[in-house]
Figure 1 (cartoon, rainbow, N blue to C red):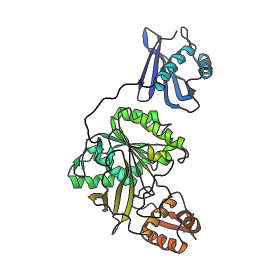
Figure 2 (cartoon, one colour; figure 1 turned 90 degrees about the vertical axis):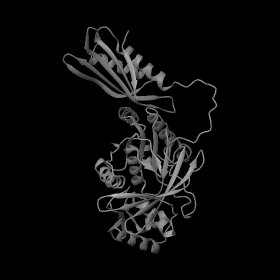
Figure 3 (spheres, helix red, strand yellow; figure 1 turned 60 degrees about the vertical axis):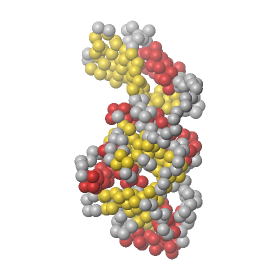
Figure 4 (cartoon, rainbow, N blue to C red; figure 1 turned 180 degrees about the vertical axis):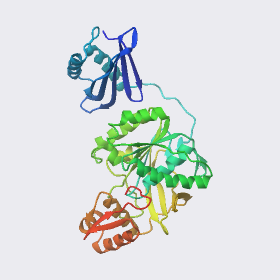
Length: 425
């Protein structure tokens, strides 16, 4: 019977079995990560098996595994026996021991206990009043509304423990998980903000951790959890939900899977999280009317706090981001504004009072940019998608072209330009 050690850390299970008890270098190492529970009872994962020998390391197996399937384990054990026969142990028993450990941990539930009385307290904030500590927060707004810019700014505030709206922020490491652009573009954007903060606060500015993501958050959960554990991350920022979900964002199951993965990731360090996402098309004609985050209603229900971001264009290239709290389990925080002032090589941020978007044209402009962020469109397609008359649409497009936000790539077809500082475009 196989006897070894099985450990768990940051979403990864690792078993070690010594081939020769007198030689620690001779061992079998089997790892299981990317564990995912399915509604049909399957518990899938990635299995990686390596034999460490005097002759070198032999990669024996890497592939998917249904942890609860005896048939799958038996099939893999037979294949491993062909590739690397063991003199004293059986591969089926090694896999049985490892999978049993995974099942017990992944499917365990908490026993019932009586609740305890606590003194009345305010909710814990990581960044007051914008980000709850240890819990998920969601920000949503139209495409190119400035969500990425705001997310990077808050990442710098938390990474450096700087004050925000007159209150000191507890310093903790930040991980920015990016499904939108790449590292070069993220570094370009955050450099403008970091230089602005350094000039304003008269201090050196440390940058957050960054991870370029490709697969869905559920598929990358184990690796992201290891990043959180290794770097002691206290704030995780996801940009943005539609890409991170890896499925139909309108489906309840997709949203539930997303927040289950987020909860599992953040449990490694009790990290807070910010999810950035877009708005629905419904109810968007009234500038005073509450809008909802894009996707399933679960994107409104699952976060403990949600903020809607609306943008006002100011003189020059300056931009005012207005934050309106749309959900809070405690007292609803007052709205506030952040004015982003663009210089030649920096962006400075000024805290200010919020303003509702001032005109129907400005709302229409937001939705035009949001639609063009998906790809080039004809005038007719834009008019139908944004419910904007053709004549009004032409006026707005030419104004956006003059400001370097859109361009006409051929007759009647328009597309977004990557403008100077970028932001979800």
